[in-house]
Length: 340
Image 1 (cartoon, rainbow, N blue to C red):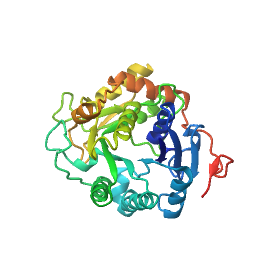
Image 2 (cartoon, rainbow, N blue to C red):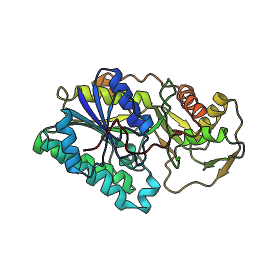
Image 3 (spheres, one colour):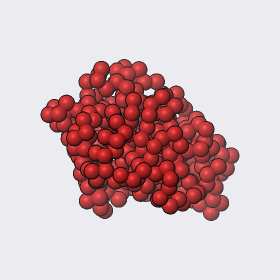
Image 4 (cartoon, one colour):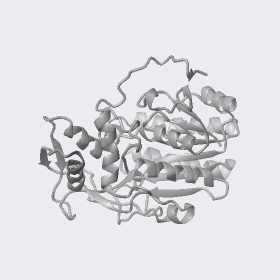
């Protein structure tokens, strides 16, 4: 299948590109490199430098490359930033996705896998969280994703769009070969923050809240390995047409506490961390765990890396060998970059 991966130079997108290629698909990456890295993109993929706000560029790319389906990862993802700058999140996550869908419709591309989030649920009423749980997003990031899900549903009803929405929780780990991984600036995700702290003798790891109603008093979250996440995306992609449009939760169905994460990182790296306990942050639920029963049943999804130690080992392999992330800063104009 000829697949466009928007945001294909980012953390999750770059892993999707690699796996799609390994499974025999043809891949075009569409990215503006605002948060992604050109060196993260597999050399076998074609790269188009472009923004999802450009209908003409998208439309030209679809037609020039005979695109049959889209994996859409081009989103802003920071909850805190979304509260301070909601316009950015509604413009990119909602407005630019609407533009993407219109370009797809004009070019007669009618398949899309949408990368969504557990943030659409807000503070859950019960765990594990199933897809039918009330959607009560509490921040602009979650609302922008939820609104986009509604747009997809309406486009499917009106225009025959085929889609799958994948709502996931905490993604971690790196490619087992260790040459691509997570590189955000600033880094806000717990596992890479803790691992990076092991590389800095002066770093301190903060725990926000130790009085939650959990086994050790710290928040519990559901972590999924990035490769298992991508496997689910590809299964969903390959099912479009045979399955009706669906929404799936993705997670380990097991939670790990903040203290468990820190302890496992110390065990894997062999390094002791300086830990500081602070007060709770507003809006942090005690426990967030997904139910992935639906996608397991419908698509036969079977996560390969379910143990926290495996997730941390792969992440550590990446961070240990790439302490500065993707080191090279390349000029935008390269021979293998396509401008439309």
